[in-house]
Length: 239
Image (cartoon, rainbow, N blue to C red; front, top):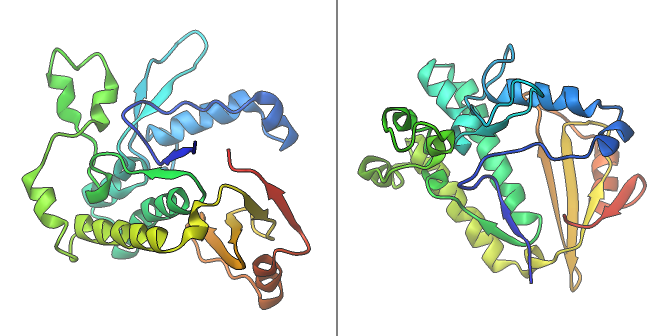
């Protein structure tokens, strides 16, 4: 058996971390969930996300989040608001970083319909009486001949995302180390940096991803420790 790893699926997103686990990291679980809800529904100042609320409970404040990967990672906002090219690039890279993790962390990567061409939210569901009461329809796309054709045009967002995902699939298929479940997670000086390694028959693969919106530089000594998997590294299973 194996895990299935996906960035998103047909369903909604819920923040199901335990309050006790959050407390160990100095985070108040309820407050952090409220922040995440506001951030991913576009209510928090400075957010890039354009998600939609699902099953909001006015008594407890609980809710879940819907939205396509492209809309949640800022690609929709960048296009609609005609942001600067570098900001559009950052939004696209968010989506690709998430899928890079999904393709390399272990298990079987699942690519949900539309993500391969960066499909955005489908707000038309609100006009359909059969769908209007269920906001999950916002990320259940209809087939688009236009987007399908753009996947071969590298000057478009759809084309760039499609090419990148094909490249990830090729690298994953050609390197058996990606199929290993065990992963070693490395500590780094920056909270925005995710670094982990996997090994198989003497082959080591290390992923270093920056989740910040600004560049981060790892000095040679720190990077060497991360790549060597020594001093300040910890082992953790994939879950």
